[in-house]
Length: 127
Image (cartoon, rainbow, N blue to C red; front, side, top):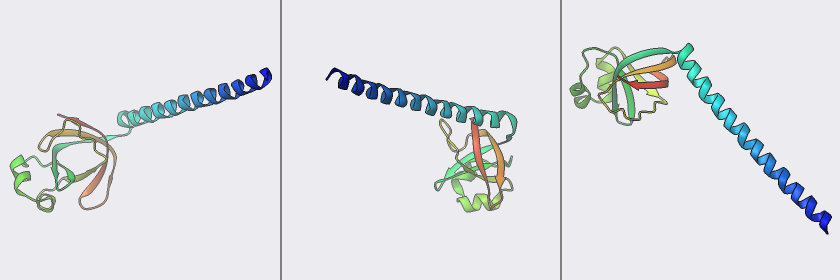
């Protein structure tokens, strides 16, 4: 009887150790992902600066210097895309603390060819 308890305890300890190791591995993979993303921002990413416009569930970056927030409020997304030369649709943008009309700097690795051009954002910073 005593032997059976020891075997059961060994199995429980092995499961706990396996779960602990799995958690450590997952945390390490998460950390590697964060460091890899930061390395992209520091090494291979390009940047753009412009004004953020959030309208019709779409996030746009407009680089044109003559653009004003009043223009964003009075024009539809299609009008904004048609009236300004440097308009980009932002994908994967996390806009914590950023609102429509804010000047921002974005980091990205490629611009997808479409109309308007689409950018997968790596990092965004309010100016």
